[in-house]
Image (cartoon, rainbow over all chains, first blue to last red; front, side):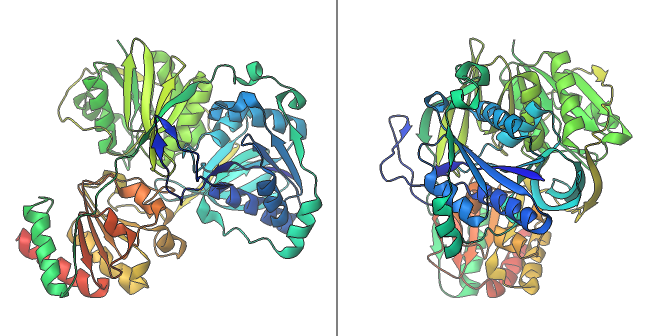
Length: 260
Length: 319
């Protein structure tokens, strides 16, 4: 089986984000591997370890992604592709999906695993749109996966009515939730080996496409302004005798907030 | 006039409040409002859909649509969108909506947006507002296509009751089943539970509950309040509650009148899912827990001691 995972470099959401003049202030920002993509990488590596597979990751955009890709190598991914091009600066999910479609078509993969969403946009679209472009079946929000045979997977999906167990025919795309696994911490041996592995860096031309072909010349949507979120203020906090303060708070919920 | 197609959110044969919210917004914008309902034995919902403000009801009613499957559901929405000529295709905030909206966008060559909180149409140009980066910032996004498929964040739009519309039912041809992604089973079905995204009150339990006895204790509080019962990621990963009970960035986004967080410290991923609530009450024994930074009312104390008193006092106030 040939597995392709997608990995995005994103801003570290644990840090404070400042907005000035409609843009995010870059000073002090740090970038990390998207949390859901780490789960995608871990899923690919576990499938490889259990069933045998060739694993490749692709990262689109984001400047220097070397450290992130080497971390994925250290986790057990074998091949890494980095597609970067100035034309991708304002890429939306549809454009990313078109780039990934080109990568897929060059590699003839059996399974694409993406994170369910990226923590910079929280959009959750790219993997699903990629499946549409490729004409492949797709299950999103996957929380469990196992190989049935060469052509089928059994996947669990967290749906609205409960956990859906789906039999999926390969080739296919899945997007995974953080609940699917706990990504491993790379071991020293893996880290050392990862340093020597090459990264296949390409721009759009080297990938065999162009900004016009993938839609980068005319994105379907574009962010025109960032704004600070409305933040809630800390309200009244009560400490002391449990019976006393709880009774007080219940009265406030009833009389002041009027929600009881 | 703009045309909006609202994708009805149906759970166990009942229309969820989010559909009424979306139809209300469409009518408030002066748009022509159509709705598409997909499922099995759902034709009886037509009067409700008319009352909620739709002027055309696209109905895909077929036993093969009883269980959610993103491919066939997307086909139905695309069919209705093409027939209605909708500029805007809106989904309520659900796992189904999140799975189907990008497919619909791709098939219609439309832009796609997730979790929008506002939308404006000026001179045929669509703009939306949405949160990003775990709710830490908001984005204003310009849509460059004539059509937009969008998932609307829970509680973003106000529901107006009894708007009323016109009955004009269009039956859709059921799509072929997707044989490449076949649902074999539906497990851990929380049938009968109050839906988190539709509940007026939500009680959520976190790591502070420690064990099943703690979870059960908090569940009793939820039962008293006829509230939706949710959890932080730690409790879902710990196997105490099903995945569809997780409140947060990666699970359900809720916006009830009252949100009670019990034993939840308040990781940003959890906060991203519940800070749209009107009023927040937090119970936590750590006075420095981040949850208190967003709570309107905070009780610092051990939940095993506080929750029974809370139940008793709420009963007193209500009686």
